[in-house]
Amino acid sequence: MYRMVPGTIRYTARSVDDRPAGYRPRMRISNALASLAVADLAAAVDWYEPLLGPGTRPMPELMEWQFPAGGGLQVYVAPERSGHGSCTIIVDDIDELADHLRALAIVDAQPVRNDVVDTLMIKDPDGNSIAFAAPRSEALAH
Image 1 (cartoon, rainbow, N blue to C red):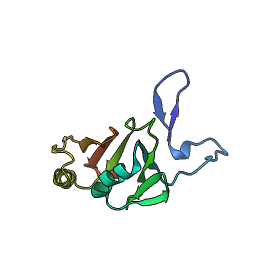
Image 2 (image 1 turned 90 degrees about the vertical axis):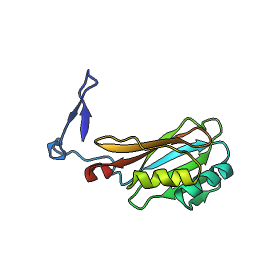
Image 3 (image 1 turned 120 degrees about the vertical axis):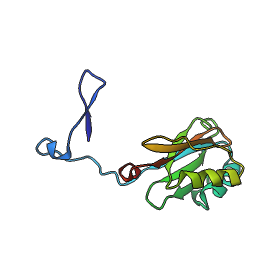
C-alpha cells in the first residue's frame, strides 16, 4: 500500500499491518478492466477477434474479452475519444505473440527485451496503443 507524503510528490511504502487503528478500506478491488474507445465497433471487432479470440457483447455498443488469469478488455463506441487510449495486456510468451501478430499481418515487429519485462507495442486501426508485456518474474505477472 502506498500513501502520499503531504507537500511532496514522493510516495512512501506502508505495509498493510501499519494501518491506523480502526482503519477500514472503503472498497476491496477484485479485478480491473481496460477499455478502449473506437469509432466503429463492427470494424474493431473484425480486428480484435482474430487477435484475442471471440468476445462477448454485454451491451450493443461494447465488446468485451475476459482473460483467464483475470481482468479483461472492453472496446466501446465513442468516436470523439477513439484513438486516444492505451492498455497493457500481460502474455506468457512474447515470441509466440509476435509470431501471431505476423501471421495476422498486424505488425512485423520483434519484442523489446529487458531484464524485467519483454514488450511489444502495436496500435489498433483507430490509433489506440496496446502494449503486450511478458514479465520475466512470476511476481510481476499478477
